[in-house]
Each structure stands twice: as C-alpha cells, then as structure tokens.
Length: 479
Image (spheres, rainbow, N blue to C red):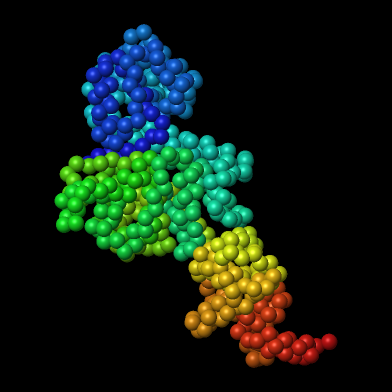
C-alpha cells in the first residue's frame, strides 16, 4: 500500500552529481504521482535555480563537487528559510548529516534510499511547508481583517461576521492539498463556497462538480474514474472520468453522506494514495485534483451509526468549513433581498420593484428551512406576479400561510433556532386565558417590531382581529 502523498504546487529540486540516482529518484516520485521535479547534477547551478523559481522542497546530496552540500545548505537556509531541505548522505557521513539537522535541515536519507523512505520524507516536508504557510496567513489576518482576494467571494452576498470569518479561513488554507469538507443545511450555498475556494487556489484546471446522491457503486466508479473499452456491455470505447476532467483543478463531490460503503472505500484510496482504477483497468492512474466534498447531513452521526466509514470521516475532516444557516445571519437579509430582486427582474424581463419597508421585518420572523435557496425562490415568485411600483407582500404572506397550514402550526413564528419557543410565565401561578392572550399578542408585536399586519401573520389571525384585541387590552389596562 502506498504512502499518502500531498502534491506540491511548486517543483521539487533534486541535487546529486550521480545522474543515475537522480533518474531513480524521479521515477520513484513519479510512481507515487509526483511528477513536478527538477533534476540538477551541477551544484554550481543550485542557487540560481532557487532564485529563479519557487521551489517546494530541496533534496540535497552532501558529497558534491564544486560546491559542497553543507555550503549549499547554509546558503539555502539563509536565503530561503521556508524551503524544507532533505539531506542525502552515505553511511560514513551520518555525524555530518546530524549536524546538518541541527543547522535546519528537515530530514536526512541514507544511501541506498528505500522507496517508502523517500516518498514518506517528501510527504512530511510538503505537510510542514503547507502548515507553515497556513499559520503565516492566519497570523496576517489577525492583524489585517481585510480580505486578500475579495473578488473570489463576489458571488456570495454577505456582510455577516460569521461569513467573513469563513472567508478569511478559506484564504488561509487556499494552498492546501488536503481535502476540504463543507457542511451546512440544504440551501446555504455550499457549492458557491466550493467555487470560491477553487478560485482562491489559483489552480489552472477546471472546477468539476458532481452530485453523488443516488449513485450506486458502478455509476460512481464510472462517473468519477471512467472506463476501458469492453469493461461492460455498453463500454464501446475508452472514457475518461470526472477526476480526469478535474486534472490540475478541483473535483467537488456534493451530498457525500449518501455515498455507498463500497464507493467510500474507493474515495478513501483516491484521497490517501492519489490513485484510482478506471473500470476494466489493472494499472492505476494518478490525480492531482483538489477534492472538496459537501454534506447537509451530520457525518459524525453517520459514522457512529456505521453508515459512514470512520477512516474516511477522519481523512475528510482536515479542513472543515461550516456554513451558517440563514436564520443565523438575518443581518444579510437586506443585501440578499436587494440582490435577488435585481436578479429576478433581469431574468424575468421586468423593472426592479421597490421593496416595501416591512419586508425585512416580515422575513426576519421566518426560520427559512430552505435557507438562501428558499429566499431566492420566494422573491422570484413575488417578482413574477409583481405589477405595481412597490413590491406586494401578499406573495410572502400566502407562502407563510401555506407553510403553516401544511405543518399544522405557524412556521413563520418560529424563533431563529428553528425550535418551538418556550413560554415563560411571570410567576408560579398560571395566567388566566385573558392574560395568556396578552402575553402572546405582546410577543408577536415585539417580533414584528410593532407592525400589526406582520404580528397578525405570526398569530394566524386577521389584522382586524388583532386590532380589536389590542384595543381591548388598552381599554382594560389600569390607569
């Protein structure tokens, strides 16, 4: 079984005066899927290469003519301290190699070098460099709250503090080779987050999305990995899969919680070893695509119930982005309403309507189980029937009424947590029916910010009925 290898975005520079060893190292790393390497047999060229290109790792032989490995280590550490240096040494140079470690070398390998030792050392060096870069970016963002790449988030409409924290986190991990897990309720915009992350990475390849819900194991394998001609009855020619289409880019797997156990095994192999087998193929292929997965389910609970593999769960849970539901970012409602009104008007060929003053207050009383997607649908429906200059609230009120009738209670009146509110009485003694009515009406008016039409909507009564009850309360109130 191969060691897990992270694919460095920048090349690995290998320095040895024995060209046959360089060729052997190149083949070994190539077999592990790492093909981004530079071979150098003349030590006098090393520093110029380091100055001309961004190098991920330096693999350096100690015994070199012209410029020794120790001298090159000193120069590299002085000018490029962020580059991990792996020393290659002979058995009679162990003490020297240990001294190199004290001077900042990352690791040393003793000739003859075992394949697993070389691949494992490169893997750890890539992980170290990646962690250093992430920590550096996180420290920068503590002192500078401005986004470095705001254009990447242009499709995500938000001024919410939680969302901007997520944007900063995404920027700090943008150069990772590890998988990224995006979680959140249905409709929160997980694919938008994945697309923004792909843009942040600067990868030259495409963003390739696929929804894996409902795919059995063969469909999953064929869709992702492709097949060889003759692999099954309808395989009349070779076909590359989506992972091949995502070469150099990002593969986005949505609804990962619905993946079958056999398919989970294949995904785990792809993540750990970066290799996969097209249907009908005996030889593995390698992928350098970044893998982003998303789920609206609780993967931890699926893991505990045995429906999701533990090893895959922990392999995916490296970088976790949890997108908050709309009910936790209601301060975004004005921005979202304006954005969707404009979008709906353009797509429906209408002039953008003026939103009524009460619309944000009304929408803020709703818990949005469908999140951003539900809000967008509501606004599109309202604009489609819009005729006057100011947008009517009737469409939204009718929608809330239908939701209430379907569920048997007033969904529009649920609090932001989505749970039924607890009724707190002012004393141990139960209130009278009239007092209970007063408590309920006062709470509805509070949530509706004293807008009677919205409070009536929350209570499921007409505005006239609410107005009568408010007058009764005022008349019976003590002077």
